[in-house]
Length: 470
Image (cartoon, rainbow, N blue to C red; front, side, top):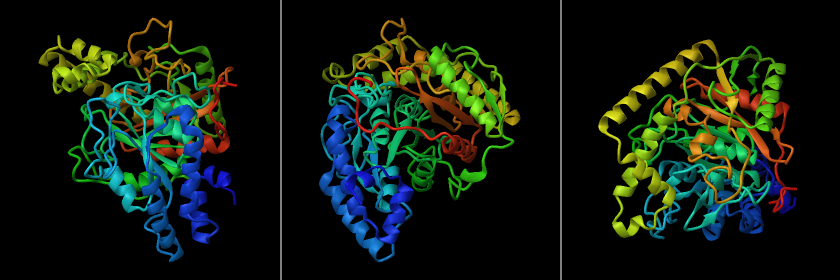
């Protein structure tokens, strides 16, 4: 079997071959590293690749499989970590010139859990500075490019992880999502991205706006996402927001289908403006879900845009980052993040109090809505991928990324699970995704519906980065 064949396999296929001894974790890891070496210069998905450490871990995994004693069902599977995530022995620059290139001394929960499961940590993927925006560029490593057209952004802030998933530079990829940072790049690159219920995937050290942040997988398939969640979706005492109650098996309902599920389809949430081609692909996906047996009703959940509420939290977090740096360091920060910080300086404690009240009302509305509908379907993003090095689509007149990504952050405010599911391409050959959101702790239902759709309508992936979008 060639390295190229191994390099396109999912975790289930690899582990079946590890068990039968048709191949080994060392061969699979070398195949993943070869793909990184071949593709990464064009897209800058990885900011650090640990060739030596990955091969050493893969050799140990190979010995375990040969003895018939793997540590877990993903022992030997190549994985990546977002560069906001600490992993012992590797730097976590967080896309910032203010963070030294010093190896971390400790493992964060996802790094520790993946390592203990025998997964092979290949390296770290790119993110904007401290994950502050929904595209992926920074002053340390530059911009990550979309593999479908390297002139365009893959979105962010988990853009490096999404691009790595699209090109299968590794199989399981950890992202983080505080306002759409898993779902936005999943939609822009044509992969599956999932944000679990808040507190079910522990995070430590916590991000600056801890009450919005969810960790989750970016993968090519839903079963692979479930395999990753079976490892990282476990309680960890170090996370002060961590919750118990996760599924024993995140993938146990994947094959149940969606017949009889009540899905509310909201093309705009009642307030968003969506590019016509994006809207049409998502509407087509709604018809396909109905053909698979779901009961799909077009209806809005009945709330106004929560952008002001979200930005009260988001910009205040930027202000906290800004205030914690010295004057010299502040000059090194991303100017866009600094601008957000300065916009928050005029707010008072009362503004935050009202934002908390508005957040509670939004959560209440959505949880009540989910008593009538099993899932809520929307576009993942309102626009197509746009030019690199721009925070908003050029010529759009927009100021903030939240304006072109209005569908994602409401579900960070509400702490509900949500996924981006690839559903086709625009006339320019650019991916489109739709979002499925569920009530709190309805994660397996979101995964089940996503899987049903992708089994019936398998996604396409780029064979290599395309510099011209052909």
